[in-house]
Image (tube, rainbow, N blue to C red; front, side, top):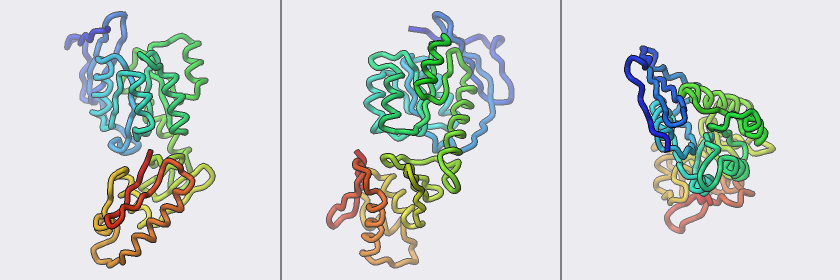
Length: 276
């Protein structure tokens, strides 16, 4: 187990530019060199969820803490098997994976992500520095390969760069530069009301978008009819009970073909977006 060692204040570089952490891997220690660095996001980081797998407790804590200090949401796993099992049930925008993990390695996790969440960007963060390792990693289809030791600010910038490339190229028009929620094989861009399929973009109406957002935010839980009317329809509107059913029917048609997604009617109560 590697033990952390914080360098002395005279060795650390402090400046007014913000927090910056240099993680230097030696055979038995990490040296943490801290200074301050400005936040510079191309998107709202609070909407960016990072699936982070690193088995070293100290390195995982420091990296997670830094990324969260920059506003990202970080879901950290220290065990490869646990991370693999969690992929399908976890909503995230990008994965940062160590390669050498107990139980299941990063290669297998990345392959599983490509299978169940096709198109999700992946970055390897690893101590495997040999050229053949880098080539193997990049050939496996990941978006970037970062070797240890690394600057946490560089990791943040690499993450942003991959997301920027990915979301700019993910679609055209309204779907560009937007974070999305994955609905099966589709991507839902809530800011623009676009559902992107492999062969087409579907522009949702304002009400369809608001209703789908509500259902997604409460996925696998009941959304009552009263809650739907309150949050989707304005107070000055007086929709009939049938109106909600019509919009649910439209969303069901749009989501048709996604075998793991279903809008279930709860008789007399409301609806539930079930995602398996």
